[in-house]
Length: 328
Ligand code: F6P
Image (cartoon, rainbow, N blue to C red):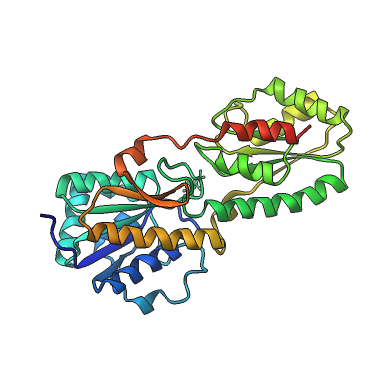
């Protein structure tokens, strides 16, 4: 028989993403709704090791549904990767009377949770929070929709300058290992080409495409590049390369960087966070552990954490074709 859960700990870990606060709020209020206690753990697993905890009641999460970042702060804890670190973390949880954990983060955070569970049998539930959308078992991670809207908004602005000066812009977006942001925001913002880690376009095809675009009468262009793309040159080297090979182009670079991780979450991310938070706590109360809550076909579902970590969140290849057709 699983132990009855009376107190849930919640933490955010890894890169922050818009919607994490809405998820914290959902976890805290679902606990209150079911008359169990909730504690917030600051700075992810590092706060667990240091016992940096705070009791959280439903009023402690007022006015955060609309806020970016995470009120619990986030960290990538090296100490939690050691057995000694995890032992300290476990001792602190036991001392504080915590019976189960909700981990809001990406696959690194889930791996930590899974190891912790295997060592101490501690119930763990994951909520996917990362702008990259690179987690298997959910069509959307928290913050992805907001990041897409931020990127599209930025590129719309860049387009004004691109078209006024007949320029080519390389816009670098986040996505270390995944091209979801580049591909979707690129289509949404009307990019000429989109370079993603999942597919190496190749320098020749890029030049060819830019040449065709000039020949077809386009006077300005936007190329969206994921930071982890495989073309073999960084965005500044790419600018030099294109200017050397296609001198008719006046190229500028814009690296959007961390602004993509900030800002008020979109309505979609707030609703998603609320749904996932409810499901995470209620699944723990049902005695479940080692799952990630996620969205599939607009239904909230559970995916074993191990699958969520090992599986790959594939890009939709049809989107590549759509992008090609749109740049005709
Ligand atoms: O995983 C989210 C992400 O924003 C990636 O897209 C990016 O490569 C990375 O985090 C940046 O991490 P940091 O903020 O630690 O530099």
